[in-house]
Length: 73
Image (tube, rainbow, N blue to C red):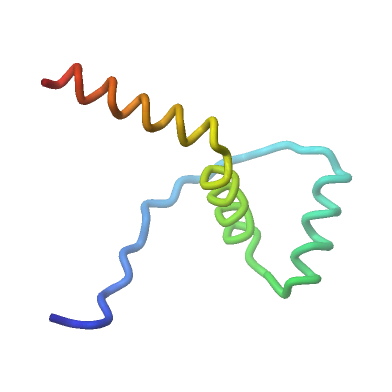
């Protein structure tokens, strides 16, 4: 069995967003400070962090999965 496996590419979708110019400026400043050049990477990592840190969201997802499994049984 291989120790390193092929990276699976997630399906990507385009998304158009509007946000305040002050937030955009802070994003640009943060990306420059960290050396991140890909806005898509920054946004994916930011959203992943929010999802993994939000206890209420995790609780909701857990309960949602439980309810879904009850329906399919």
